[in-house]
Length: 424
RNA sequence: GGAGAGAUGGGUGAGUGGCUGAAACCAACAGUUUGCUAAACUGUCAUACCUUUAACGGGUAUCGGGGGUUCGAAUCCCCCUCUCUCCGCCA
Image (cartoon, rainbow, N blue to C red; front, side):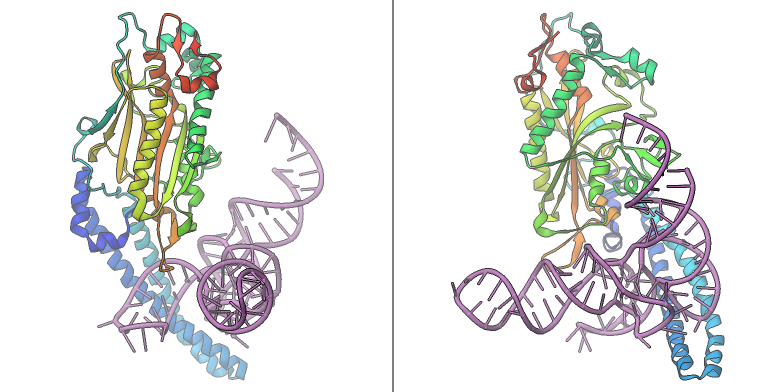
């Protein structure tokens, strides 16, 4: 959520920045917020002033009753009636305006960082860097879904029977490969100073709102109506919410956490080759890194997180490129996002495996995540997160890129975890 | 799921209708004293909003959340959430 004072003080810039994200009716909505805020302050003042008078009268009555002047007290009691009416009126109106203001603010996405390129879709993303050689495969090379079947390591049909499309069953060396990747990612994160946590896989509405999944992504999350809980679409939600309503000490920065979790996404509206095999699942595994950082250092931190993710991909010997997302392709909550894509040789396409973002104060404002600054005042911290990494497409790329006649070659870094160097 | 008890500031914990935004103690922070450490002493120590306060100013709200009674609620009533104890069930 954007900070109200920034909207008020930098109205024109806010509107301009929102246009980079192709946010519709920015001017209209921003002006509505400014007007609602003015109305809110007006009502607040009226309410406070009225309340101040009646508080004063109530005090007088107390004193009089104590002194035995009940007749005088009764007289003043009569007076309080009109103030009570006014208070009720003001507070009702105030509640109404506050709700409208809050709802309007929740609909405004984060402002993109100044380095974010303008653009409408993923085609306008900017390639920042690229690493590794794109492998040349034989003409009879298989796509990963065929490899999965050939070695019986991921069973899509079985998952289909048990649950439905997008819920595969990992078997034998396939299951072991999953477990190995998770351990590998967690160990690397821990070595890099991230504290491992195991968060809940379901969150309440407040948590989903705090990180920005609600109201923006309502309908993309699985919802347990019986208990009003959401299945997490990413560990970002529970892990960032560890710090909801917390006031940190400046010397605590950077606060670094990592977590493995399964992620659940309804993916309503996806179709075609995007959803084939492991490309897009309803349930998948991911190791997430989350950082809470001082506002002055959050962009340095973002670079470090990028370096961490790059290190993982290089250890796995997967060719990748880094994209700076354009305004139109960025998430609602992000100020700056770098996507990591791995080349999937048999499919001949780049697959997104990680997204590393700085949210600045967008999430911390929603969740009241603050720190005591050097002047002893509370101010909002910056939050960042990144996938490090999401498993399915990593597995897809590993299977496709490393296929040999003997089987699938396992990268050296992973062999201590898998216990085998060829998967067959 | 059934029965009972409870929820107060960073922590412990007092407070059953007005003088309580909240005692006391602990922790924390600043200072004094001091070869060093320790101890002692002094002071500071919630958050948010409003406000043309010059200013360490003024006002309002907040004692799990919401609603109600009352001139006045941490305190009384109702609903919800959560925690604890006992019973039941159970990976």
